[in-house]
Length: 109
Length: 115
Image (cartoon, rainbow over all chains, first blue to last red; front, top):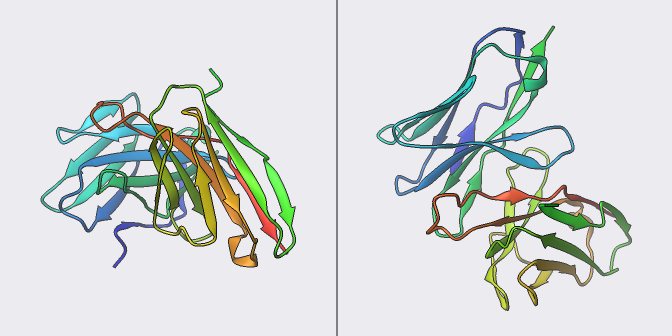
């Protein structure tokens, strides 16, 4: 079993739709959680950190469920510019950041 | 602020050749990392550094060496390149974990092909 698992997609959604991604992690002692966005042939960029109480940034909402060991990302009112690969990242050691393989999102006009 | 920069952006090597990838950051981050990204796999940690003059092995260190002589620079060396080292290499930096904002910031990547 991979330490961090994501559905690779692609998720093809129309503009304006709401889309949700899930990510599961295997190490119950994991301490920090992040969502990164990666555009084709570019570097990962931090989208948002994920906190236990859940957090929101504009159209993006992240949730953490420690009991079930998953994190989620909800994107409301999808834009064409949201098309990218979304990486789930879990810190399970002092310097150990585990990256998921990413979920591809395509927002269609 | 330039953030995290990497040179070169692209490189083609023949098997057995050597090269050094340079990473520089201007955010005064203590920690720096080198990752490789291959199709169908998440980023994998090669080496990391928690401060000037210190380095440590990550998940896939074989065939690579690193040095951190200055806080702002982290070098990744390939002594004898192999086709299995064909990949995209990303450098990242971050503040120490004691800070709430310890997320990683990435450079633009180096695309390396070994023939």
